Length: 139
Image (cartoon, rainbow, N blue to C red):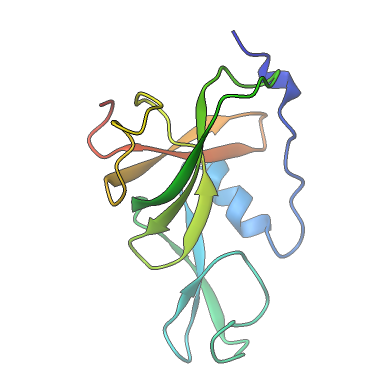
């Protein structure tokens, strides 16, 4: 069993506080530019497309697809191996790095473009990590 106390716990900043507040509440939050309607991640005080600072925080659907991944076989005190390190493409457009869970960590099970949904792992009272699993639950 891995020792999850060995996981580095993110420290929210003023720019990322909305994101971590959302994950704590079981919600994936993104920023959206009101000027050009672009969703983006990671959080920042202006739109990376049009540079407008007219932005809002919105709840994402939590739906995504598997864009890319590697399967890590190297030992890590906080993770049972093997485990995937993935890039997922949210339905809203942005890409996130996350783990894929509740599925065999094999190339046969981790199929590019497979539909995913967000799940959250609570690390502390303040921080929950978004992870993704096959849509509909365990595969």
